[in-house]
Length: 78
Image (cartoon, rainbow, N blue to C red; front, top):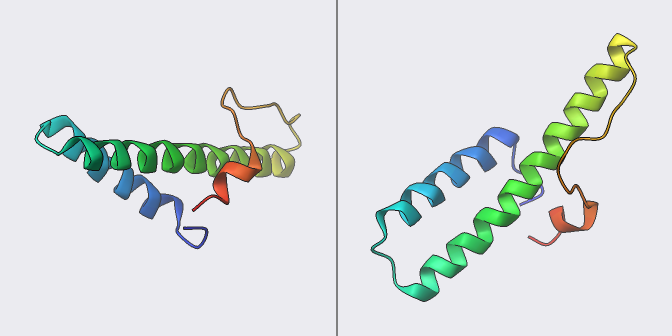
């Protein structure tokens, strides 16, 4: 999923949340969707962190770490 945009990931994450909130999925499917959602959430956080840092660089502000675990290797698991 490395070629997906932030918006595409976010839309998929919203769809996953909606499906899980219904509560009518078989256990295995629910767990699989939950795992996918976790991965998407981390990927979105990484993208947001990168964008935030780019803005700070352009504006001359100091770059600070985002309050999310942004291990690069989690984004490559898809």
